[in-house]
Image (cartoon, rainbow, N blue to C red; front, side, top):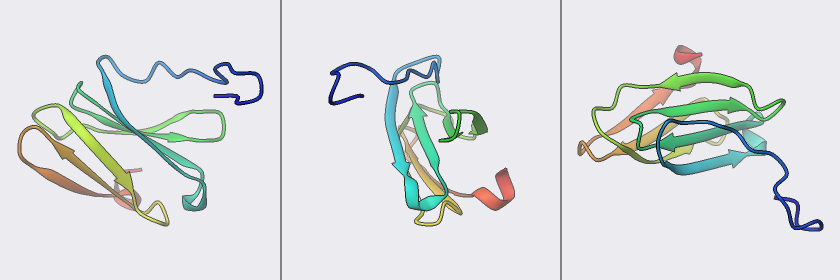
Length: 92
């Protein structure tokens, strides 16, 4: 969102269902994380908004997620009563 111009700066068609979380931590290597009711979490490069990877091991809607301080780990939580701890080094 561009605060000065009061308009959308960039839109990503990221998921096939409702997006539940978007996390951005510039100190973690310029990575974005999005989670969705489509049972996935997706990792994006801040440079060019390119999809880096898909985390798709949940059985139900992913409700939230977060990025570790150095972008080496991601945590997601889901309606299937589980949370998952992902290693970015092994995934991407």
